[in-house]
Length: 418
Image 1: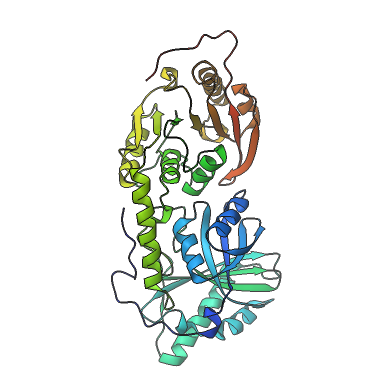
Image 2: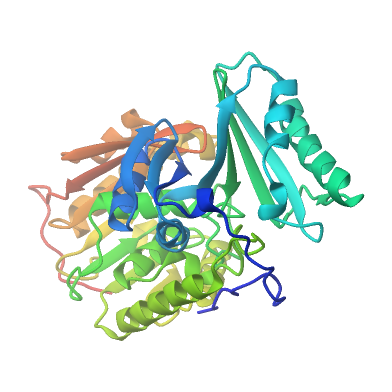
């Protein structure tokens, strides 16, 4: 695996500025996430050393130290961003935002050599233009540097060294440093994609909620008969192998931060690499993916190779009609095309009926995880769903259905295997 750099672009890290406020116990963080993943993120926060997680739609507020913040960046499978709160204040208008932001010593966080960007979200605020609110924060930062030095840092919309997040709810404003940099769902292994790929964080949630875990029996099988670019397969392998999803990433948002603790980060990365090495040495279950589209199979193969898992995951081109039972027990996990992904609804119905028949005839006794948007289409599989989880694939409301496949009474078990 690629080892993340301790600093930015191999350059020596800037001198860390001491601050009683930032080093006191109980730093305030926010983990953002996709809708429906809040409880999973809250559980991760607790497991990784965070305290007092409080969920809200699309976010979890929590407390912890810098190590916990770093651990979430490295190990969170479900979060999108980890934000470290810098300041909170009342602000009902953009000019107040400017004045309050000007009171923060920005030189403690980054310098003239760093590029930066400001993102803003508004919720039930008297301010109605998020871009203008972000602009006023940017103006306050630039004016402070210009007043002190006669120079100003550069704003970079794409790949800034420092990302500042402004969130205003009502008249309460929160300024935070984005420790993540790019969204955490960007693991670093997906170099090839197909139409409508799942975000890696959503794929990890589907795998987890379906019941796949680290420590599952090596005699198990995980099968995705419509694997696309392989995201479900890779996330399942990372979970089983105890591999930190952030290990593939080359940079994080804190690497240019003047308070970045490089020795602490290196220790956490070394610890994660040791755990991953142990995970790779253990006996593994079979993880199998098929797809009818040769381009999807090629994309999956590239992504699996980048993830370093080519000897752990098997993919090949195969039509759904050719699906046979690969073993006595296992889990089928599938994100089939749904209404929004196929122009012809009749084609979708036919596909779901075929999948249902294959499950009944070939995979009786297996655990089934089925991710779909339309509950009416999901019912065509004719499975007794034992659990349903409500999730979102972007703006699309979806459900993960979980069941144990039951053999149709008229069917005779097939002894054929792959």
